[in-house]
Length: 472
Image (cartoon, rainbow, N blue to C red; front, top):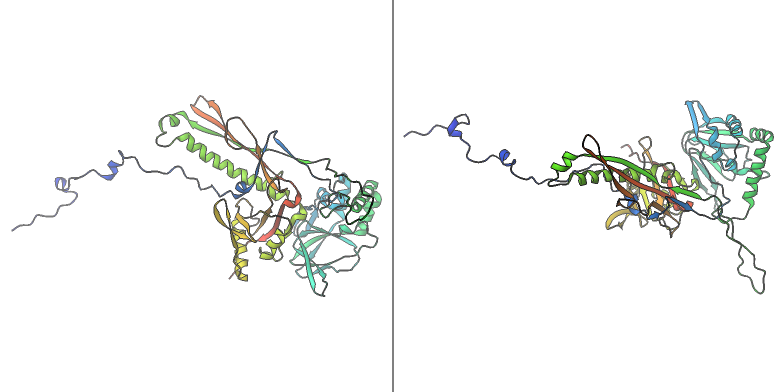
């Protein structure tokens, strides 16, 4: 009995195909496919939690009560080398005593009289009770303000860092003395101006003397704890006491926010739109991804734009530094308690991870909160939301934002136009621009937006947050 020999694919008829191959079948089948995907889409929590206010005239004006408190700005520096640090003279106008002074030559004269002084960690810059003989501007580093507490223990009153100043508040006091000790928490550099050098500049400039006299007089005007012109009231009186007359004064130069925009031109070839629209409309998918990219840019601008971005428009007295570098529960407590009704915290995902590490060290478990139907981490019941648009500086430091939101709460609001032609989404429109000689259709896609901080304490920032993971 004989057995048939085994066949191979090369045996011709013996290896003849018995059924349709899958490669050929796919030519007749409609595949199951996804819509075009985009990796750059983020959660965009900031644009989701901001209350949006419709602006009918393209400009939003924030009216406030008249305030006599002078904002504390930040001085900038020029570094030509490790041992050559100089103050950028025009930024001396950020000092509270020089805010609004118009003479740049005086700034140049003052800047030339500052000399650098290097500090090591643990060095004492000034002692509590010593006479104020110098003004300090911190060029780099972190310093702690310490004072003797009520029960004899030394207490940390606060932290100052890059661009902050010390000693300028002694102006107008007969024999000024330091009310606290300043000690370097890290190595750094401070710029020093001796009072004697300042007096020399003051003697030569009548305009500067007049400006400082007005500054001292404003500091003596009655104000409330927020620096606003006081409203005179009477309480607890009996009988026919003479009641004080008063009025609420307004800021004569209120800030106005103009709507900004992001735009692009979406181009689609007519052949693509005519022949390749099944099963998905090519124009709709192209427009969808374009709108997503514009919305991402919108949120980046809301955080980083120098005109209205939150990082650049927080009042300086609403900025705090971390006590030790990483974001600890103590740091977030200080940030939250600086305003009433903090609604939301925003941080880079790496900053949130650094905060969780500090909680783990202390055996603490952060809360959770529900925001728009989603469970998110929280601290003290306040949602702690990720925002990748907050920059990481130098690869290891970032910031955490605290917001009170809404017009009714005198908080932070988003601004968008109330109605625009050919509106596709709120604040965004798509306008047909025609077909060129290459058969390409063009659509102008525009989104209009801005943000406004209604009162200074609506927005606070925890700065210089160290997000680097500790070495093991």
